[in-house]
Image (cartoon, rainbow, N blue to C red; front, side, top):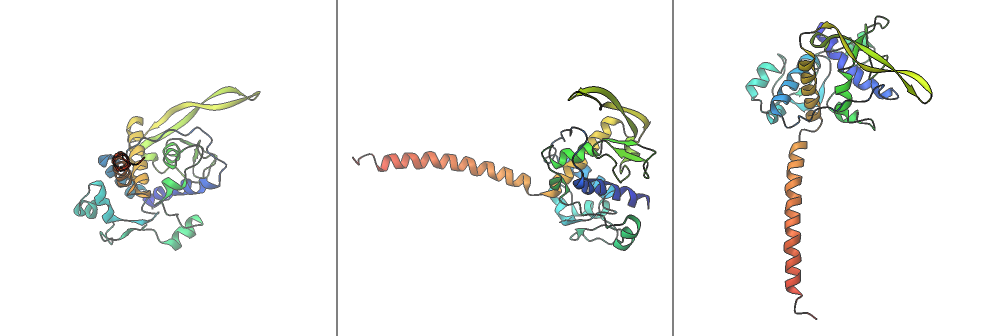
Length: 251
């Protein structure tokens, strides 16, 4: 039950945030790690442990994880549930009827969440990265948690055991003739299993995996695109010289 609640937490905040006016803080830049196999493998582990209990990735098959350097044996032993097969899609283990009864709606799919949350404020990766690092305790909320990126968020902190508890430190500034409070930084109230640097590193890995999962062929597409452009540039020079040679005697 605990794992189910942790898993549900991530996606509810990511998806329901679509109805919000926008993030309450400036989005932090997510690290670019979609080419880092170790980061993607760690992100896949975090995704399975903290998200997949409740949220499916219906457009992703387990065997596609070979693309990030995992063997079928590693996938089967470490990243699948007992009843899953290597060729299955990544389905949540939660019963949809139970999920609807407990939370009022079925947990949404996370396959494309890193792309769907893109906005003028930043990329979807920036949004998720900032969201998972701006939780704080709020006893006035039913879940006991709130979030600076998505104020009055309706989900608890999915990774609170790793991060621990923190509180925002405010600073008063002048804005458009009015004095407002902005977040100056964060103060650790209760330590988690990881240090802040380790937690940020793991969140970056999870975000990288969500980015990769949203478009597994992205790195190949970019790599092939570079070679295509190089070929076209070289062919343009060849065609230009052939054209000059062909018409040189025509007056």
